[in-house]
Amino acid sequence: MEHHPATLSAQENRKVDGAASQANALAFDRVGMQFPDGTLALEDVTLHIKQGEFVSVVGPSGCGKSTLLKIASGLIPQTSGTVTVDRNNLGYTFQDATLLPWRKVLGNVELLMELRGYSPEERRRIAQEQINLVGLSGFENHYPKRLSGGMKMRASLARSLALNPSVFMFDEPFGALDEITRERLNDELIDLYMRKGFTGLFITHSIPEAVYMSSKVIVMSRRPGRILQVFDVPFAYPRAPELRYDADFSALCGEISISLRQAIEG
Amino acid sequence: MSELTSAQLYQPVPLPKPQGALVRGIIKVLPPLVVAALLLLLYAWIRSNLEPHRMFLMPSAYELWENAFSKPEVWADLGSRSLVTISIALAGLAISIPLGMIFGLIMYRYFILERGLLPNIVALQAIPMLAIIPLIQTALGFGFMPKMLIVAKMTFFAIPTTLLLGLKSVDRGALDLFKLQNAGWLTTLWKCALPSAAPSLFAGLRISASMAVVGAIVSELFFLAGKGGLGQMIINSKIDFKYEQMYAALIASTVLSVSVYLFFSWLGNYLFSEWHESGGKQG
Image 1 (tube, chains in turn cyan, blue):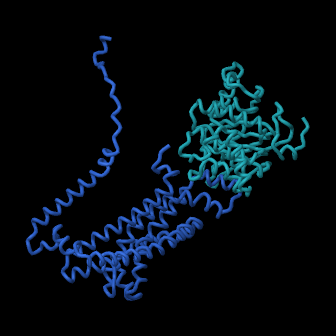
Image 2 (image 1 turned 90 degrees about the vertical axis):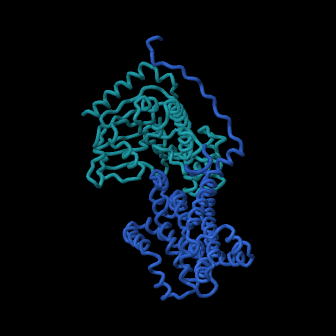
């Protein structure tokens, strides 16, 4: 597939082409991170994510998965190596929905556009679109405290989607949700991924979630975090919920699980 | 089944009938009234045990009515003096609230200023108020301004400390969200940190508000010249041996203090109850 990178990052219809196109959307080259207290969080991480790929990262607790996202987004600078990414067009969801409790759903979804200086009419129009897209229509005027955990996360996704990000990072976004809500949101996120065609980098503790969502699963070692193994996920998008009970799916989860156990012990 | 010797049959418990508005009202109002009645009984009992020549210290309801509340001139006096006292209290708050907020903000902005200022704010609070009033008097005289400053000093402490606490408790994720959009410090403050700290600040405002009237009355106790407020009335009635009027002034100052407190409670509730987790309406 030949795409011009500029037109790709530029707008709306970046469709997923089964496999991804060739240009890198996000590249870590020999990235290392040492905190001021001397803790070595990441060591020599090289990871290239192509445009339109959806990559998940699993690893032991405290292995620097979240640090990787913070470095990619520029929240903290790495102490060695280089990162290549267009930071003007990033989406980022946190472990919590991080909605501002004094703003209603609509105001929260408008927030990032407001900070970017969109006009009020444009903000309102785009926010309403995203709210409809994540299935929150009718809840525009609810304060976050009146929403369930899953609805808060949807509002949080809508807030990021409003900027139409070309690279979307997820820091264990569904970790605090119950299984059923989580699986539903997995499907909804895949649906959004296919519509919007962003490049995804997804941190999770759940191997089935990683496999279900991604085209590639990265296993990281315990601290200092390094990339131990990369698994390609062969299943085509869109993915049906039945995939979770597929034998090949289970086999792949099993392999990753073994790799992860080695990461924890080794 | 016979082996389960400890097994028992448990009957269902039907839900209690919802209480009517009247019952709910009584449950809300009755307990404080009962406690108040008990306190009044205690008052009467202590009074009845006083030697007759000391009974003036605790006037009876009849004496209060006869010598204070039945007299229009006492009501007029209470009214005009309440106005004086409340204006001292509000003027003091008008200094301490903005000043306290500015201090809270600059301590939040510059860590080094927090290190420098906070211990001194604590020290300022630790100076006994009554001990420096004579000094303030000597320096600034007997007008409105020194009293206002006394109230400002008494109500200052709670403002910067609660604001700083609130600002420092802002959700890190929310701050990261603003940082990711390259939002400036002022934008982040205005749209994120301040609204988030507002409920904490209002807890401080409530404390300050209830202290303000107390501070105003204390300040007046030392300033007897001219037409003063309730504090002056308290001292004057001592001098004139009109203890019923002293009680009337005490009651008026309590009402005033509680009113200011209630106003700030209402304002905080009005502003935050819709969205704050501690607020009234639950989802």
